[in-house]
Each structure stands twice: as structure tokens, then as C-alpha cells.
Amino acid sequence: MSRTILSVIFVFVVFWFAGCNQNSSPSAVIGEEKYIDLMVELQLFRSYIRTVPSDSATIDSLQTEIFNKYNVTREEFRKSHQYYQQQYVQQKERIDRAIEQLRMDQVQSDSTRPWEQNANR
Image (tube, rainbow, N blue to C red; front, side, top):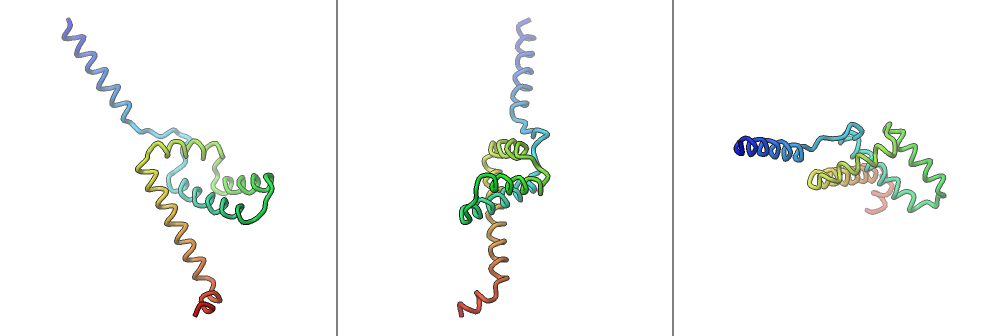
């Protein structure tokens, strides 16, 4: 009898740990690529509002436009961000990809200003 109980407990513990290790994503989590693109866009937006005086209504309106562009709500982004933050190693990789995308945007932006390049010669 005790052997049967131990077997049942063992099976229960194995299934319980297997369930804990599953990293299933909630249905409201936005896709990783869209999430990275949105992080980049929001960072560009944050940089913009630091340089241009704006009131809170304007900031809120512009931020809403960004979310609408990606067909994502603030709440979906918040939940997705919380979900992705739990995956430390993968989140660092996502952030690194976003930083690289920002760098590439900067290089592309710099290369489209030939007058600045000529002035530096």
C-alpha cells in the first residue's frame, strides 16, 4: 500500500515540476519581432520628447499613435513586456537586437545627410 502511495506522489511531483518548467506564453503576448520593433519605436519616441517640449496630452496622443501603428494596446504591450522580462537571457538578446536596430537606423540617418559628410572633410 505504501509503495502505491509513494508511486502516486512521485508521479504527481514529476508532473508538477514539468508544469513549472513550461514557459507557455499567454494569448495576449505580442510576437517577439513586433515587440522589438515597438520597443525601438518607443525608445525613439522617448528620445524625441526629451528634446522637444511637449505637454502630457500631446505625449499621450503620440504614444497612442505608436500603439495603433502596431495594432497593439498599451495593456497588451505591458503584459507582453512583463512576460518577456521573466526570460532574462532572451530579454537581454531582444534588447541587444533593439539596440542594434537603433544603431542601424542612426547609420542610415547619418548616411542620408551628405552635407554633413562634406562639411567634415
